[in-house]
Length: 185
Image (cartoon, rainbow, N blue to C red; front, top):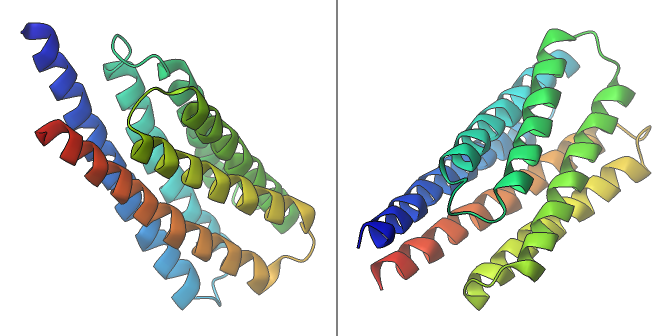
């Protein structure tokens, strides 16, 4: 009975983490799309905040669920990459647009690959695997789009960031909702 209680607690924590990450992604996406004239410094601050929050939530969840989550090491690595890039950007505001775009593209691509691997290897409900796979695909496509056109920059880059966040955020919230439904069943 204690093991079942621990599993429910872990799922409940994952639901909260996904919801927080989803809301932060949506807020970032709205800022990026409705404030397209952002200066590079402002964009770096906003995106860094998103990466740091997402990385911290992911790091905490990977450590807390280490015992029951067989993918905790992937979550931990992704969280450390997000945290590292977020902190690097905050500490190096004079970073060039090309470097910023490169770091964003790498972050998205890594996130996409990890989610796609998880979607194929996980044995959870099919709906959860589909949502995880969609999230991974969106991240990977956004990463490739950003990395293929690093010098295009400017408004196109901000639009890709905003659209990615507005697609990924609801997907995270949908995964949280699906997990909550499974928990209550």
